[in-house]
Image 1 (cartoon, rainbow, N blue to C red):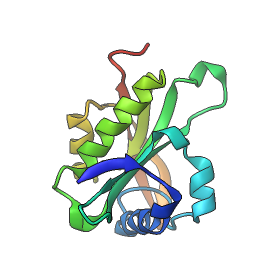
Image 2 (tube, helix red, strand yellow; image 1 turned 135 degrees about the vertical axis):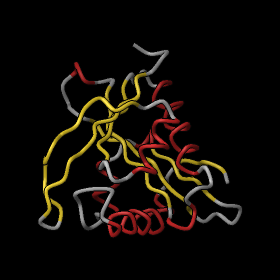
Image 3 (tube, rainbow, N blue to C red; image 1 turned 135 degrees about the horizontal axis):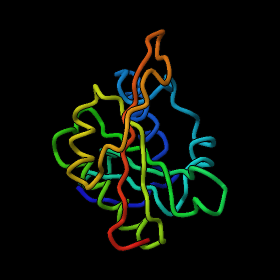
Image 4 (cartoon, helix red, strand yellow; image 1 turned 60 degrees about the vertical axis):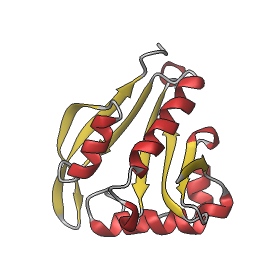
Length: 162
């Protein structure tokens, strides 16, 4: 496995992995992955990566978006990371989060944050190992398929930027 920039040529596989995660019901309030144009427009180009196997197949992806256009939040981004169901448990998520930490710190970003459903224990464990911490719980913040869900807020504060 190696990590590379996420490019348009990876679009179909990235969106399929995204949809697989959404279909499982513990990754997002979204239920349908966006089209490539919307995905591409929403994610910062310098901070999106794929993990590829030896044949070039996408095993997982990570990408960030701005949390605000206000200058005070210029160093804060929100990320998503998804791993193909068949590639879980092989270090893909950790490798992607390490690449993300390197790229965001090189760009002067001091906080990477996300929201994770408490039931997504595998994601919470990968994030904890990558230096993220739970900073709070948004209780019953939204409904997914008619069920109120909590979201744990996680963040990684850069030890070198800030």
